[in-house]
Image (cartoon, rainbow, N blue to C red; front, side, top):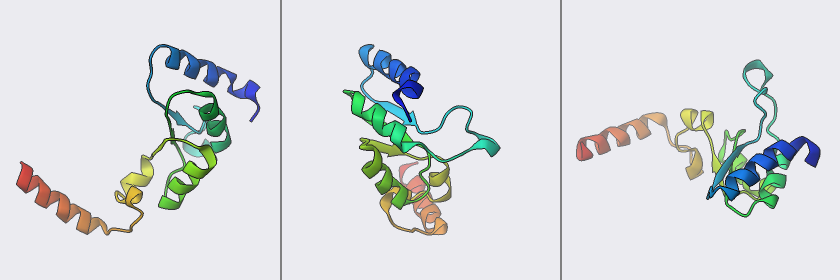
Length: 116
């Protein structure tokens, strides 16, 4: 990705930072990349934006496994990683462990009883 294609994103990020934003989350896909048009996440663009900001930046998009989390940190230099669909399928995604859904459900229900 050239800087020209990222300029609008960079300008928005600079404006948000100047207005006092203390952390940004950047999704590595364009608004057109959804549904059947979803494509690979552009972590190179995220890396460029991160390198030009003075505040922490999280990256979202393309995080399905713990290996994706590690790769995203390594490839973008981001400060944090977010996931949506990956966490819906594997709530223990960020732990790096495979925890069966029924075990997580049982633990949740026990905690709900304790802290209700």
